[in-house]
Image (cartoon, rainbow, N blue to C red; front, side, top):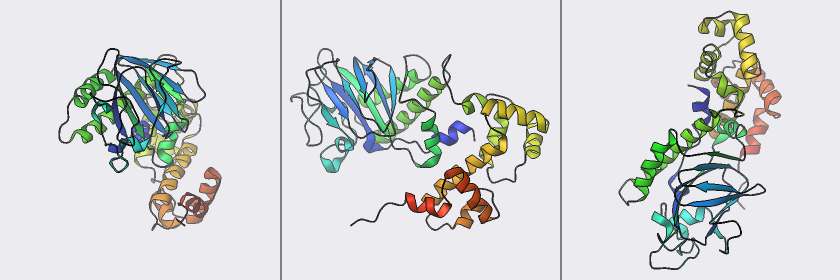
Length: 328
């Protein structure tokens, strides 16, 4: 398992969080949920994405922008548009709230522009200057995927071209029809689009990529990272890791620290504590000793001390702070 695959595995599109809109000017959609990650891509036309507290970004056909929450954003036909912003959140795509899981075009060819949660519509069909926008809001599960968010800016964009072009072609074809199983296909296409977008952004020339991204390409450190992620509970020492990667202990220690920014066992401890944090929250019936063993600690007291040093609270305190408050 490589680092990127591990970090992105908890980021998945779900049906009620996908939407495709065909919009005719003037229009303004205010996305109010502040989702951890929102992917916006324009199939046809253009528009302006206006993130909260940041400069507007022009989004042309076949360009993609990813917005990191919790800030909200607005998508408008032009800066200073005369359109009244329509609040768009999860309710817009929830059947129980009058929406649909995937509303083809989000428009009524014979209707006027209006709201969404009450069954009204966004635009007037495919008139002159219409823009087709696809939006996917991603919930981010657990501490593992949070490490990916920490590596991203509030707004990142990729232009047309590259691996994501093929995904855009599939997306455009899929939203143009209404067929059984469509939601599953759209969800997976959106996941594919997000992965392609992030990989292209991390690989862009002159980019500020996280240390672990570049380190994955190193023949020695990349192998070491894959081993630590594939077998986090193994009794690793620097010597054992060096032996598995085919270099000396000193070579591995220096190359790992130079490329990743910290020694291999320090990285391993932080990764183990990230895994443990998710296990504590997701597995209510697991004891602290169970979680300790799952991440490579035979002694729960040693695990608790390491967890507190890295996370700032002992395992029981952390688990209690992440539990939802009882309903009144």
